[in-house]
View 1 (cartoon, rainbow, N blue to C red):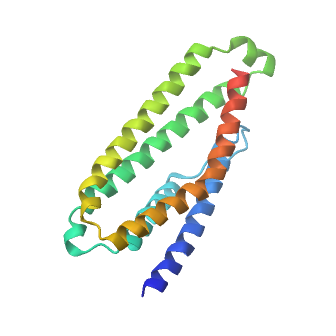
View 2 (view 1 turned 135 degrees about the vertical axis):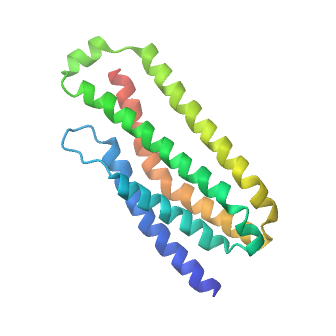
Length: 178
C-alpha cells in the first residue's frame, strides 16, 4: 500500500511540477505573444497539489476535521500569487510599447522598491496564514506522516528551485532595466 502511495505521489509531483514549470516560464516571458496560463489550469494545478498533500499524509478521520483551514490557506495563497503575477504582467504590458531607452529614462527605483515591498509583505502574510492553518493538524500527525510531509516539502522545494532561480535572474535583469 505504502509503495503504491509513494509511486502515485511521485508521479503526481512530476506531472504537477511540469505544469508549474510551464506556468513559471510563461508568466516570466515579457513578449506580447506569451500566453498566460488559464485560470482553469491554475485551479487544476492547485487542486492537484492539495490532493497530493492529502494523499501523501493519509489523514485519519480525526485529522480530516482539521484539514479545511489548511486547504483554504493553500487556495488563498494560490489566488494571491495569481493576483501578483497579473499585476506584474500588467506592469510589463504597459512598458511593452516603450523602447529600451524610454524604459531606462522613465524608471522609478523608489516605486519599484515599494511594489517589491508590497509583494513580499503579501507573501509573508500568506505564509503566516498557512503556518497558522497547519499548526493544529501538524500536532496530530504521526511520526510517519511527519516524515512524509517533510519528504514532500523537500521534493517541492528542490523541484521549484530551478524555476525560482530563473525567476530571480529575470527579476534582477528587470531591476537593471528599472
